[in-house]
Image 1 (spheres, rainbow, N blue to C red):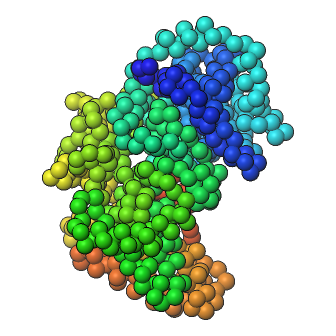
Image 2 (image 1 turned 45 degrees about the vertical axis):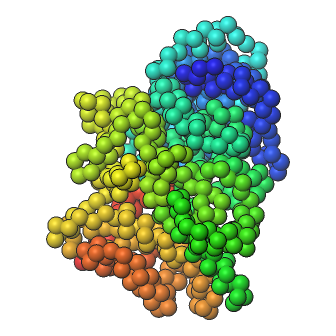
Length: 587
């Protein structure tokens, strides 16, 4: 069938893959629970009937505050196919953000997962005057209604003719969802996307996965436009979607299900890379030499023809080392999609060499989200680039090399904010991303930084902090970093160490400590970080080099608000929290 609205994906699925017994899969009580496509469609329709029985009208806003689970997808489609607007909300945001979003969206109905989230939201729910219905996912002695009750209500009030009528009334360019951007700047903006915005993406991307790719692992938040669009794509192609239990169980889940496709952020791949690198240090002398020979060979892998000598070495490394790594990781990968931030080219080379082909993508919530992506075919994929602009999307560089784009992917606008929309989308329809970039001669796009993050020193030199941070966090000692220096004489940095690695290093060198704060003050640790800074500074010009830095005793996480859900640092939050320490760096 011709998919023109997002909920058409369900009818398309039934028509083309009617025997799919594992459309959505999650782990419950230690076992994988499968929902067939028929169960998925029936439950979705019953949720729609339940919403209609409670008086939900086209245009009403339906909020979903939940981690990834099959019910998330069911509620998403259940709302959209009756003309309501689906609004996913991150489970990790603050009470103030919840209050802003629920009021701003004039939320009519909300679904909240788990006791912890209910406790967090309970104080603010009475303030939301438009809110009529509150549901949780299971009873758990909750004071709120729960999902099974809504499904039962739907079963008792089935109106198939009305549902057909409502679906028929919805146009491709109607509002489908509002995504409140998590952002790294602190401001929550409601990005309005139509059915057409996202469906166009699916049709442009459908030829990228191989025909044999049939099982996807999902663990990045469905609230994020990037993962959400990919999960729609998996369903468009009839693939099984397995939801990881948590970020901590990804490795175990990969081994259990052997996925053919997944998405991730570069930081995750960097952690696997570091773990594999450190594993070699425990090997006997001769095995260690072979191990690191193969490791370094993988970092030099390229997609174009490498020559007969490299190919011979590669085949040997594949037999001796890479096949064992794949068995340990548990993958049978066609594609690993990397997005959210730039991945170092040698790491993309490394994973592609060992059988986890990295495809990079780039975009924003405002662009539905893909602007450019690695693709199969001539010049479609090159390490260090995010591939070619998506079909039907125009991309060019504006003043100061800002990336701007125009096409079917550009949002309808920011909800209730025409002034902000006019700032982002100019009169000719070009959306201004705020990112900077350049093109290769073959037309692939390279992301070089964030326009607002680039600062000028007091000597008039421009510094791109993200390029520096990306290079320094290759170090096993550095988990996260923020580079500062606007209108200062030099660049400085705050470093959040990789405390798991640092603790193992301390144990190996018999360094005693009681707290993180005590550990990072130890003379041997101070000296070791001086060596790291000196090593990585050599990759940069004098005005870009880190002249002063401070180790902080804190791990930056999404829970404490220092990182966005895609693990990017929130500069304004960190600068505010460490204001005194930053002032001392430049004093």
